[in-house]
Image (tube, rainbow, N blue to C red; front, top):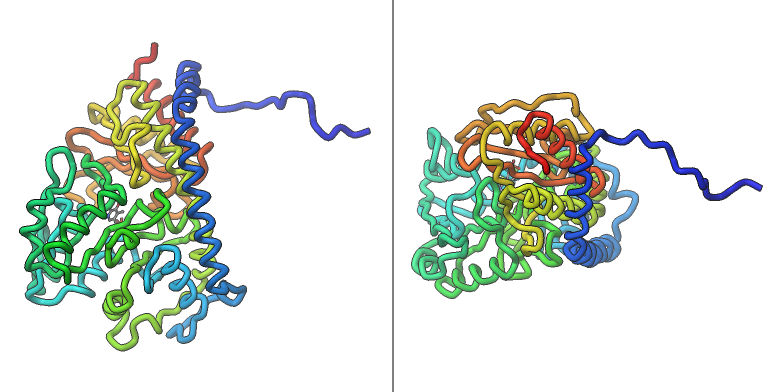
Length: 432
Ligand SMILES: *Cc1c(COP(=O)(O)O)cnc(C)c1O
């Protein structure tokens, strides 16, 4: 009789990783058991929420095919907007592969809602690097919000990274839009949790009930079991090559929130009057649906990879933000690599542990929109997708590697171990 289970151990030729790293990884993983369990709990809640939105909106086979040309009557597109709106607790949403990036979606929202003479105030300090030129803080200023007569002000975070409620109260009074960045981005400030966002929204709306609170939600989707709109924000914006696309959506972005606000954004993306009713989806619908469907589970893999990274790097003596058990609001882990050599070795090691382009060596370069050289390890199925295991690092003090993603936990974990092995081989790491 044939045996159902093969009793012989499978002869595996695994990766050549230093025994001491393997031991450390086992310890790190053990220490992560509580955070892994919590991550699975959140993934279940989010997964159920997504499934319910698919069912309630009667997603059908017809939704998976796209349109060409003007894209009139694209059911897949229209229903996808509704599914996103339900999942994020919004009245309406605008989910499009024609958003070229998160920055483009954010820009569309800012130009969509703000008018000449209005004031935009950032409540979480200087926004993400690429938005500085959009606002007019850096670069030629040509075509920026400033160029169009939109004023800008900001409230810096307090030294401990908490919002400065007193200053918020003063500065939002005459503002049209209050801007909140949920994730740390390329900075060491703490990521906001939803409770933190709720606190800021309360302060802003307390001083100015008409203010539009816009949240840059990049990297935050599905990390907690709710989203910022459910904590008082009016508009959230994100990228589909990050969390909600799950590494499946090939490009794109979304805006979700109040119906009128979403319409203003759609008028800016396409044309006034046409708004959401045009824009063909080509062959992108199915991938965007599938991405959203997988997103809760993929984000959970990224969060587990993040917790594992914090823990093993901490055990190795590198300072990490956040730490293993800190409540997470995004999928990013900042690891202070101490110097440029460590940073470069780590990032190049992450690339070596990637499923695509593992043989390529990333080098620091002057990336458009950033004000220092950046090294980016991203061996991804979708170019630049940072829900896939990736490490971005501006080559400047304090030499922080911003590590994120991992489509699956086993591959994310191994990618980090391969990076550590690279550091060992380049004498950047001393093991005991
Ligand atoms: C990724 C990101 C953006 C947008 O960046 P793109 O590369 O243009 O998609 C904006 N804000 C934050 C916090 C981000 O992480």
